[in-house]
Every structure is written in C-alpha cells, then in structure tokens.
Length: 230
Ligand SMILES: [Cu+2]
Image 1: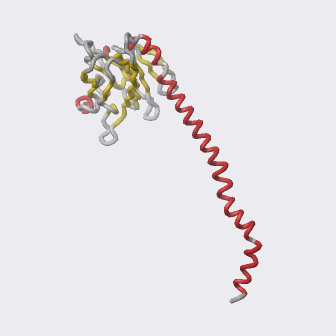
Image 2: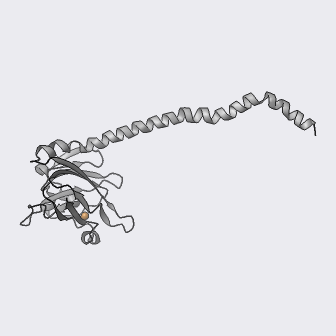
Image 3: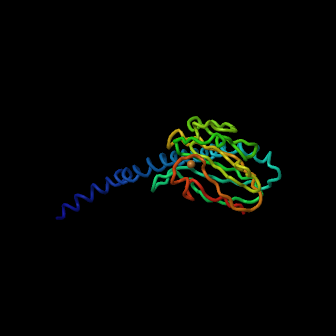
C-alpha cells in the first residue's frame, strides 16, 4: 500500500532526467531538424530546376515568334494537352475550346501523351500558317528540341488544324496546320510549340485531321472545338 507509491517515487526522482530527455529528443531531434531540413531543401532545389527546365522548353520560341511578328504587340500563351478521356478512353484535346486575344502573337504549346499514329493525307504533314512556317518539336525520349517545317507521316498522332483564321485559309489550304508527333509512351509525351499571329476578333473551328478516333473526330470537345478571338 504505502510501499508501492514510495517505491515508485524514488526511481522516478532519479530516472526522470534521462528517461524524459530520451523520449522527447528521439522524435524531435533526429527526424524534424535534420531530415525535414534536407527534404525541404531538396524539394526547393527540385522546384527551382523544374521551373528552369519548363522555361527552357518554351523560351526558344519567343525570339522567332516576336521577330517575324509583323506588328503583334501582345504575346499570349496557350497550353493544350492531348490525352485519353478518363471516362470513355476517347482521344481528346484538353481544353478543346479556348479564347485568345485579338492582334496578338499567341505561343501555343501542345503536349501529346498519345503514342498511337494515324496516317494523314500528305498535306497535313506540313506545318502551315505558323510564325516562320515552323514548329518546335521536342523528342519524347531525349527532350531535344528541333525546329521543323513538317513531320514524317508515319510519326503523326494528331494535327491541330484551322481551316480558316482571320482572312486566310481559302481555296482548300488550311490557314493553320500543325502535325503532332506520337508520344514514345504514356509517360514520355511529345511537345510541339508554335506561334500564331492572331488578327481581328472572331470565332473559328479547329479540328484534328488525323483519323484517330471516329467518335472524337465528330464530337465537339474532343478532336474539334472552338478558338475564340476576343
Ligand atoms: Cu486526333
């Protein structure tokens, strides 16, 4: 009765300093201060390098786009992704409907995760209607960027095609056509960057000319959509 509390009191009086210190210092001293500092530092380095790498892909297009600008004072950016719809698996542009400013140089970057190829008529293998008549294409494996005026027909997955844009695009030739090479895999996309010189306000239909997916080709919001110029 009385010996139990007395017996426990005296060891506690001696034991507390080391026991208390080891219990609280274990978790607090080792994990947070050391490991978390390293983790936070590493993630900051990673974020910084990711930002630099991201810029590195899109920056080269700027000089050529503004250089041959012909009076475009505004530069805007449009980022599109081609992937599979998570619900029905259909090929899809994300987004498929978008708005760009009038009288602007719009740098368009299309990231394509589709590794399938779809044979197009040869004219849709050509880059048409972009600044300089070129597009920047990144290799899905090496990441190396090349300036191209066409893509081999056997490598094309989709196209970004505007039959008309502003006043151009009459007589059977599209105003804009950019062939999009297939990805190497679902984790190794291709990236295509090009600049469009946008004129007056209007609403234009874009479409993919590669016979990729019959349902997608005919369904607005998948492989066809609206480019609004405001
Ligand atoms: Cu397509």
